[in-house]
Length: 341
Image (cartoon, rainbow, N blue to C red; front, side, top):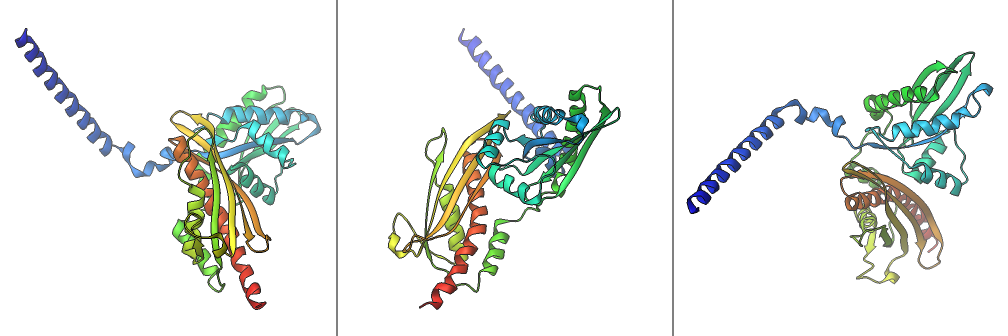
């Protein structure tokens, strides 16, 4: 029996070695194959956050069709690997809260505002047009960051099934985003370049002492490191502001307080990816007078492998965006204050 056990043990070791050799061989082939090529970045790229908003009835004959088309299109695009959609309920809630009504033709400032409120980088809208016996479904893909637009369309008969027409447009939109989506989004800019540009624009302004205090909540997750507070503090330090640590320093040492509240929460899951929305509100307050110098908010959606990483990244990105917008306003008030002395 002992001999049999030893024999089986030697066979098991040999089999394991064989499996390892096969695995390493497969790995080597995979690494050398075209699938591992950096040229396939588009395939591995994270989906782009997008929102499908109401369509417009382009003609009297198409009345009532536009809303159905938008709902069907959202359902079709929910599975598109190129996109991660803002949930319809979430979108409707945001529009209602801010008393916004958008459909069809979206002005550039409306697109930018919707991007800030929803975290969507792309808006998808359009119109339904009936002419004679023909029906056209015309869609627009709008960047909320650059206001640039791409188009997609499909033609059918009025009597055709609306779902079939919407499916054609969905396929066209997916292809358009996959092949040309980068052309309407802003070119990626490194954090260092963004900081350098902002620092140059503020180099002639005396910079006051500040203290950054931002509370953060990650819905459904234990408390983690303060991503937003850390990011804003880093921007202040890099730009040359005297930055007082809220834990070790005294609030009285700061001339201005940068106060805020951040919240991240799970938006959706798809396969091994999670979409998390992070919302951050910041205001800059004169510590002595209580005057609000600047106030703003930003929502960012991030797609990552884990909810924790996505939550931190969403608030970090929102903090960097708000720092770029708000800190120049803080620098601009300082010269006027100095002159009064």
